[in-house]
Image 1 (cartoon, rainbow, N blue to C red):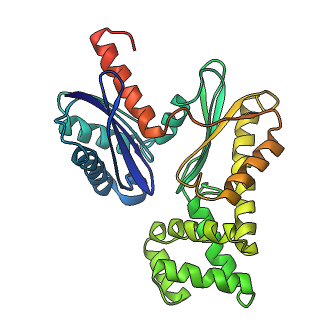
Image 2: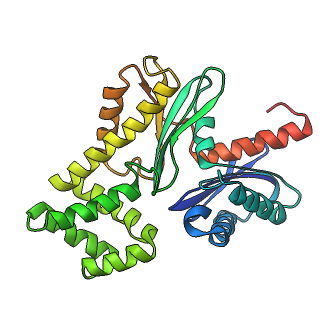
Image 3: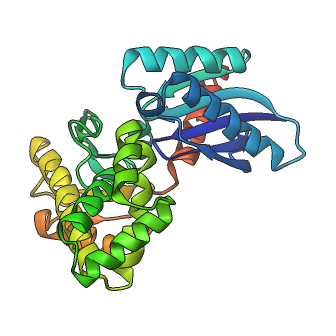
Length: 308
């Protein structure tokens, strides 16, 4: 059966959606991280294959891939983009292949016209589109330069706060939960592992923090409130640069850190409403991987001269 593929890849996971030529979802797959900047190009490309195989194995249908759209974090760098594009062209030689950043996908899932999406996953960014269709971005440059309020940032802050506030009951409880979740015995082991590979430590602490916050741990809640302020500030700065901060512009949230905690989600929403009181908070029409698949379908239809 002829089909199109949509990939959404980031620093924590990769998702694949398979559509048929009428736009019906045939299969979904999930795999490991595929951000080449964080894990290297070979590992990222391997993750794409693993995710595709997961989708294929979920159904007995034989697929003939005619188009692929992959939205991958890290492909804003030309060398990463070119290697991912060549890999997918080699893997699917008869298909139209499009590679773009994961941030491009979320905007395509927004209604037409001016829009902003706040993205919070392993990293963070705000992306927007003005009335003329021009796109702008705030953040999304990696942990050394940005990623404020991201899962990485929250995990790093949680470890620092747990250590600096040692002796208080909330910090002691959060410390025990972090070490248990990481499978490490003390902070010295945490330091060793985070020095060797920070992405294997800090983002993994995020689910511990949000669970603790939902269980009313005041230290965890303070960390998430601070993160929510940083995230909303990203969207606010972007709105100002687009000259839409006083307009009723639709704003959505996306990323793996969204929808994981009632406390965190509410904190972000409250901060967005405070900084952008005229914004209209909405949900994405489809998930990023499905948006990528729809882009792939449009490319396939355009190549045949049919209406998208």
